[in-house]
Image 1 (cartoon, rainbow, N blue to C red):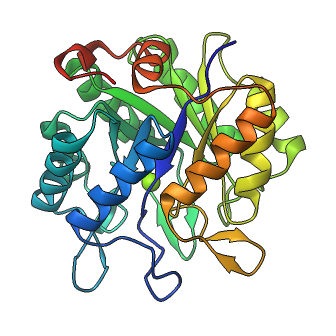
Image 2 (cartoon, rainbow, N blue to C red; image 1 turned 90 degrees about the horizontal axis):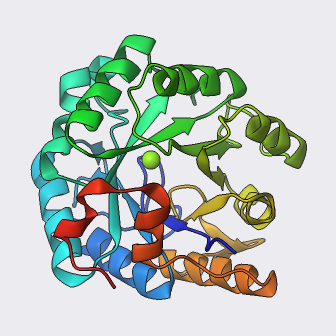
Amino acid sequence: MTPIIISAALVGSQPTKEMNPAVPYSPKEIANSAIEAHAAGAAIVHVHVREPETGKATSALDLFRETVDRIRAACPVLVNLTTSGYNLAGQDTARRLEVLGLCPDICSLDAGTFNLGEKPFLNTPDWARKAARRMLAADIKPELEVFDVGHIDQANALVREGLVAAPPWYQLCMGIKWGIPATIDNLLFMHRQLPPDAVWSVLGVGRHQLEMTTVAPLMGGHVRVGLEDNLYHARGVLAESNAQLVTRAVRILRLLNLEPATVAEAAAILGLPGRSRLPVD
Ligand code: MG
């Protein structure tokens, strides 16, 4: 049985402490949340950074650097840095890719333009190709984030063009407003569009986090949980931490006779070439 990779998406660019006081802002808070999530069973942490005082979304490289340094000093969890650049004017390609210089294990690579809330989230084919080429050259695994069915075509084209090292790693992002709704029917349909050798994970927004991350492992998929996608642990009850959401995912896996992947197992599943430079748990 293949172990299931749990990614913890710690903070994102949207949630605030007003929505849930457990949302981390500063590099220290984000790193501590990563360390706790790893201890609870996450093999990957997906990292955005925020202005420490205001919580405003930012792409400031020094905040990414401090966060990554703190995580790496404390635990071997695989680090996945966002390249969404959602706060940048025009989502400037060069600035979105600055985080590659921090040598993360994985970077998100958004494929497909759509309306994210009230703003366009621009992920043109040109952006996706440039990002994929840079990640391939740097031995950084792209996490192909797709928000709707057609976006999978754009991601699959990168794979066909040889711009993504095998196996390709997809994150099916379900239930984001104006993206594909998070239903089981849609998940089955999304899954059918993936290449045969794809390794894939799903995230569901809000209450759909529980639904999607329960169904996906039964289909051979991996899961992403965390406060970026969902602020609640139960109806009307806020989550206390990212670790609490990871702990729930581990409990569900074990009820299904599945096991969460260790960092070393996740690195093997994803074929991470640069992982040997890091201690493995
Ligand atoms: Mg993200």
